Image (cartoon, rainbow over all chains, first blue to last red; front, side):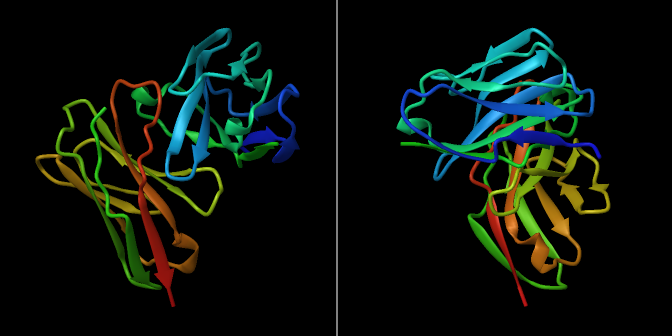
Length: 115
Length: 109
């Protein structure tokens, strides 16, 4: 089944403890992206990747890192999480970038709480 | 990318057609109109997209006005499972989808 998977789905952690949220897609998509969703602010893009080894900042990249060593995986890294990073995170992928007029597939989300 | 305006919320009776409007008066010639929906806190789900012709798929129909300044998403026979937030997105050159606040559709018995 074609899908985007994220792990973990739920995570409660403490300030400063490094964590990684994994994202994987099995559709051979070139484009991958991370969004966060907060009440009243909607979905905002954190980072995106056009292809392997190509990543770029989205609208809210501060406090996050990403890597794209393989086409299928696009992990989101929080080196030193803070409470303002408490949010619902979504990974997305598509065959080509959004400006190429194609459908994006979203993962099920990761609900992160930083105490 | 062009800005979109949608009503905050709408209600629809189950079995009836749900018509969700979207204004995008600043849309430019190469920008497409996309619709996604988000059921509760699940990941957004693609519904349909179009440029200037009306489009239909197994989920919905998309009607775009001739001047392309507005569009309507039509769910022909809404069910309770269609209760969700519906996002109208216009994109052309950006490297991301810009989600606004969307329309919260409540389908009732």
